Length: 65
Length: 512
Image 1 (cartoon, each protein chain N blue to C red):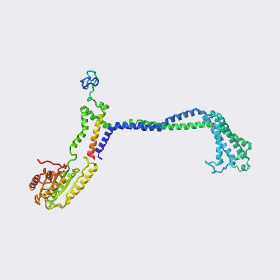
Image 2: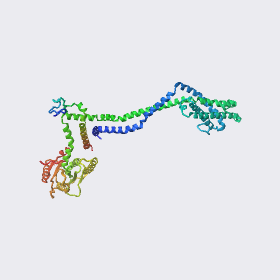
Image 3: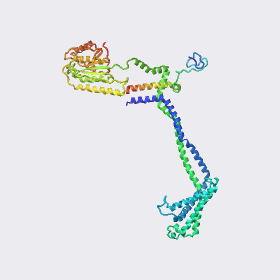
């Protein structure tokens, strides 16, 4: 992938860019604490909440109406 | 309502709250900041300015009041009260001649003469105080600094002089009335009667003049009363302002309180969501999984649009043996048959014919009904209730067959011919067809196939067929015959098989 700072290619996730030295964050190498406090993930959280809500509603309709 | 149902409702509500927490918070903040806070400011914004005004007035009054002067004024006020009492009786003494003094003719518990005396006495006191103000002896209102105050001073002195002279004249005139002197009944009247004219006149002159001079004590008393009233007002409005400030703080920070409440309420859901997201991130499948799940309903809807949305309805035709040879199994067979009714869906049709001596005779119509079909794919609560009530009513009808008299012969041929004609009617071409036979399959009528029989596209199931050395041949015969009549499948269930059956969802298993 490209370095987001200087555009140098290729750079590896979780390593420094050989051209400009910027550290390339690996988005999958994240702790639970970092994930909880990451507001950029809010949209994903809401998507998961929506899916869980839809599943709950479907279960309720199928079994209790 | 079951516990699981309650838990589902709570979980669903928490998820909904979690999804909507930001818009809810922003909406409430907007409403409270732009509506309630503005209204609240308009309603209570003046309290603080009013408090400042009260405080300034208090400072002004306090600057004029000294403690030593106040103590002196209080002490002198006792003398003033004493003189006022004397003055009241002096005026009353003379006023009795002019006005009636009988009780019950005046107002506020005073006789007309008493009321006039009181007013005159208070007027003398207040006029005296105003005169002192105009000459600058007292500085409560600083009247001496007003322009054209000389005129007011002359008027006030004149009024005071007239009042005093009137009081002197009345007292002296009363003393001259010998007839009244003789009638004197109170101690004060007797004392006044005993005095000479000039002493009475001197007392009636000196007392009001002294009162007018002592009017200066009113300055400090008025200041004291003012400071007490201002203090009470200040304390009351301070408390009101405190309540107002607290309420305003609550209103302007309602979003913080709401956020805290929402955070607490949605914390369990947030943990679950974060945990799922964490697993998806670690598995590096967050995007494909979310896209897949979101697209699932669309995929299902596309598939279902391609097909006929409603499943094919079922036609269940039951032949129930009511002959003496099936006596041992008849009641069990009826109960067994009812379980198929429970498993029926909306739109399914059911018909029950009896195998008796003359099974082909159509003088008795079969017990038949159709389960009301729902309008949508999933039946509503009302539709389900209608379906249940239809099933219940017909189950009761079928149960009553247990009390029906048994027949002497078993006409299986007749029953099959009647069932064949019914099943192949044009009314049921779109149905998935099932023929359920509850019989020992021992035909004693020996009628034979007089009419054509056709079970094409029909699944046949024979229940409670008691297979033994005597019956095995007959059962095998009927099985072959039904296959010859093009039945999709013919399944035979012994009483043991029938009794241990658990799944009553009717299905067709093709013949191997």
